[in-house]
Length: 366
Image (cartoon, rainbow, N blue to C red; front, side):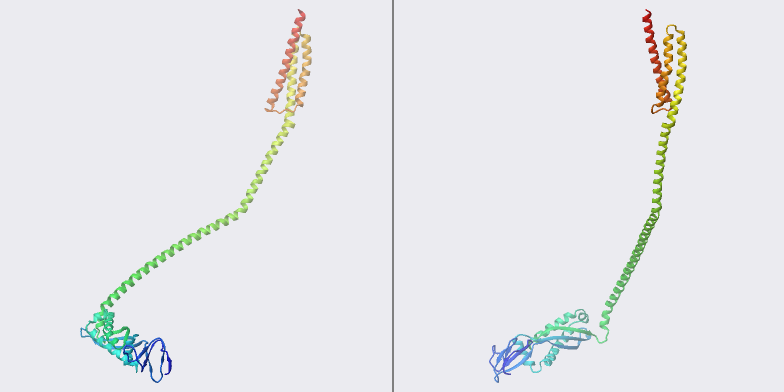
């Protein structure tokens, strides 16, 4: 190839035919390009990608029990110049096949050696320990050929149907099954309790829902009943109010009629009756006065005059009483008291006049 050369990101470019640094057999270029003189230089490429190798080995344990072990190794050419030179000198012609075969052989030998120093129980319980010891033991040899290991994983361990591993696992399996049964029983118990709790809560919910529905229905029925009674009740209340108003009006009309009867019939009748009584009393008094006047010689003329005037005085009083608009407080008794008072006043006047005249006559006689 001529001109400027650039390796891929996972490649190391090897340029031979010229002088190199550090006494290397060829120039190693990684991650950049370089000019190569034609005809005098030769360019080759070494892959730095990861490769994989599988191994399957029959190993004998410390207890002389045969075990079939299968594992997988992930490896690659290291990135430093010395490792690239070492790997190129060994695997450049057929890199992938030769590296995989050699790597498998190296790990198989170390795997048999380490398994022989361990018991089956240790291998089963500490599989990662086995892998780490094989990896450490192989590291020096892999580094000498320019390779580095990314990982080493043990895939399976089998005793070839001897039953040893199964016997080792039996107690654990029994314990696991027992624990599984216990856990299953506990889970079933918890599930049963949860189911019972769910059923109880569901029953309570249904009961509370039924109560709420019953209360709601009662409220609806009550509201409907009140609504149904609202019309007739309102009509009855209105009718009662109308009847009360009419009764009040009838009472007031009766009181008015009673007042009219008192003013138009009772009062005039009582006044007329009182007038007749007063006239009778006056007539009786006139007769009495005439008798007394006849017994007295000096007062005959005066008494006769007063007697003649007394009926007229009483008549005038009675007439005034019959036409007066009086309010009678005590009925007939009240009228009688009023008339008697007037008659009494008339008699008082009469007596006063009589005494005055008698005094005058006595003075004239002296």
